[in-house]
Structure formats: C-alpha cells, structure tokens
Amino acid sequence: MKEGLRAGTLDILGQDGLHRVHAAALSLLENPGIQSTSGQILDLFRQGGAGVDRDSGIIRVPAALVEAAIASAPRSFVIHGRGPEMDLRVESGRIFYGMGGTSVPYVWDHAIGRPRDPTQADMAACTRVGHALPNVDFIMALCTAGDAPKDQSFFHDYDAMLRNTTKPIVFSVVGRQATARILGMAAAACGGEAELRRRPLGMAMASAVSPLTVTELTEGIIDAVEFGVPIRYGVGPMMGGTGPATVAGTLAQSLAETLFGLVLVQLVKPGAPVVLAPNTNVMDMATGQCTYASPEQTLGKMAVAQLGRLYRLPTWATGGGVESKLPDSEAAAQAMMGMLLCALAGVTFCQNLGTLASGLYGSMEQLLICDEIASMVKRILAGLRVDEDTLALDVIREVGHRGDFLTRAHTLEHFRSDLFFPALFRRQSIDGWLARGARAIADVAHERVQAILAGSAPADPAIDRDVRSRILPDPPAEPFQDG
Image 1: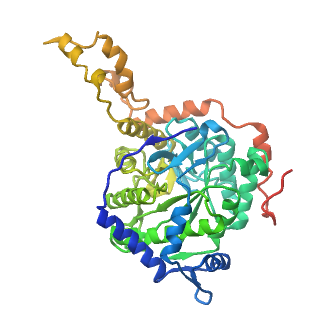
Image 2: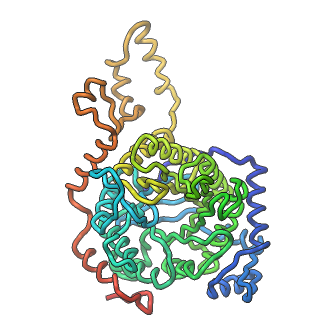
Image 3: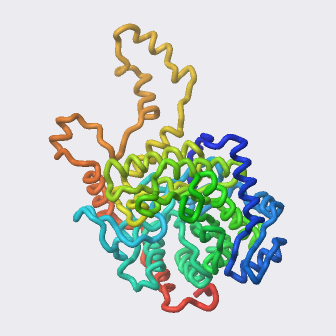
C-alpha cells in the first residue's frame, strides 16, 4: 500500500479568513440553499432534517447537519487498486498525484505536432504509460475512446483503464444507470460483487452544477456509496461566469456546494469516505475559456487544502493541469506551479497530470514531464535531516582548507540519499547534448513513451473478456448480478 508523502502546511488564508469562508459557506447553504431537480435527493435531505420545498426544489441545509456530516466522514480510508500494492492510504496531510481527468475530445499526437481525434487504442496506450510511471498514483482518462459509439464511449474509456492498469481508477458518476454499469464492469474485473464490496475499486467522482444546483446525474452517488466506493465530490464554478469574480467569493460558493455533497453522502451511508473538491476555476475575460493554471486559481487550491486541514478531511485539486497547447516550457512552468504549491499547501489528490489546453486533450509526453516534476516535488517534501551525521562537521574539519569531499566515505554513504537524480531531465554538457542530437525534452519524453508501449501490458485475458461483456447496449435494470 502507498502511504503518500507528508504534504506541507502552507497557509494562504489567515485564521480569520479561514473561518469566515467556512461561515459564508454555511450561510449560503441555508440562504438561498441548493436547488435540486432530483426527487431522490430531495427525499434524502427531507428525511435527514433539512428544509425542503418540493415545489421549488430548494433544499435549505442547517449548519448542524453540515457539522454532523463533517464529524461522520472518516479521517482515514483506503482507495483500492486491483492489487493491494497499488492501494492508497488516504488522509488529510498526504499527497498523491494522478493522470488525466474526465474523458476529453482530443489527444496530442507527437508525430504530427497537433491534437487529433482519439481512439480506443489511444485510451489503452495512455493508461499503459500512466501505469508504468512511478509517481502516478491513480489513473483517470487522458483522452477518450473516440471511435466507440458516442453513447458508449464512456464505458469503453473505463474498459480501457481497467484492462491496462492495476492502479486505482477515478471514474465519473453520471446517473444511476451508468453508475450501475460501471460497477458491473468493476465487479467483473475483481471477481464478482462480493469481492467488489470487500475491496471497492477506485473512487467515484461526482459533481454538481454551479451555481447552487444538483441534478439527477448526481444520484449515481447512491449506488457507489452503497458498494463502499469512496466519493470525490466537487464543483467547478468559474470566477466571473458561474461564480463571483473574486477568489474568496467563488471559494465560499464552491465550498457550500461541496459541503452539500458531503452531507448527501453521509445521508446515504453514515461514515462513507469522501474527498472534498471545491474548485475555484477562472473564466478568462478575453476569451471566455476556463483557465487551468492561473495564479488566482492556484491560490484557491491552496485555500482548499487549508480548509481540508480545518475539517481533517482529504481534498482534491486540478494541480497538474495547464493551458499550454503543447508539451513545452509554458506547460512545464504551469504544471510545476500547480503541483508544487498544491503539495506545499497540503492538497491530498493532485490530478490532471498530462493534460493540455485546459483539459481539452492529453499528452503522454506531457505526462512523463509531470511525472518528473512530481519526483522533484517529492524530494522537496522529504525535507532536510539535520543531525550530527548530516552536518558533517568532522568531515569538513578533516578535509580542511582547499581539500575535496569526492573521495570521502561520507560522500559515498550520502550522495544517493541526499541528492536528486532525474529520470527524464538531462544533465549533459553542451557538447554532450549537441552530440546526442540537441533534442528538446518533449522528444526525449516521446522516446520514453515508445519504450514503455513496446513493453508488456499489465492486463490479463480473463479481465479483458469479463469486463468487455459488461459493455451492453442497454443498462441492466438492477445494478448487476454475478455470473
């Protein structure tokens, strides 16, 4: 099992600001409340003690219900892969990095130097690369199965991920029928319903509609929670669009919407594991597009981590996402900003490694670059050990004036543990770099991608057959049956 490195505790909100954001979110949950188009969600909140107006669909959530949900959610839990060695021990204050996001319409093709329509083979290839990288802890889609029937592509995406990685997979909740089919595929992959309940695979990602709305699509939470699948609940208001044009205002709204989801999960099953994802996206006022790597968006992510420490619950952020359209220096700079600051602030899950163009397509080359960034960030998080051995005063005195440390036993004992050695980035002389073709880092990353894909895949034929049998033209009436 992966425990995750201890993340930082960098505060962006003072204590006064932290508690004012929390109080503002509680206030919004009571006035104006959350509007639901789902009768099931209205019933759950009415039975749970919230004020529900069925005519308007408005749910007014009292602060006591929110505080009870915060107390009910577990502080520590496990997200399972298909093997115990890939499991993640989740708790606030530890960090994990993940490939991709939700299924996206394009994929970056390094050979032609532009994005193109993706295929099921691309989905499988991206997943295999993510599986092979040591700093990618969980898997999400880096493209989509674009050559599958449009109404079935979501399930082919999940199929490709299940068959090409044993790491935990994060999948989207898009209504009860679709969630039931995904759970059926997961059961086929792990050996049946009983095994799925014992070790529920991955994590389900549920989202509301900003501002302050939930729909029938969120009902898929009910089935996922009943099977013990952890829920990542979040929203994506855009500052100046579907949220206020201030970080604080959008943070308060996003937090209110997310705490509503936390209450919903606890009403379905007290003690069910939840990851909080109150995003603070930014709408670029010049283009109307959602940004993925603006400084103010990163400030919001850091504030989310601080709120997670207040509640002692795990958090989620799109820290690896970039706006650059190709894997270049812009992309690397934006990824480093998000990944490093999320780690220093203490975000638990940092996703979107490998995505480009504000999440519109993924790049396996960018994924390798992000994996290298993650290894650098982890070295920073490991910190410095200061004691008699590492201060090395005796060695310094022994070397004296104008000596060297290269031949000393102390250097041999410590250089591998204290010094960072890159796996992708190159430390060449200028002459050596020129002699090896003067290649850009994206070209080096592409070569590594090809080497990974030339190796063997982690799937086995039984999983291939059983999982694909669950991709049906019509969803089953019941979640699924073994057999």
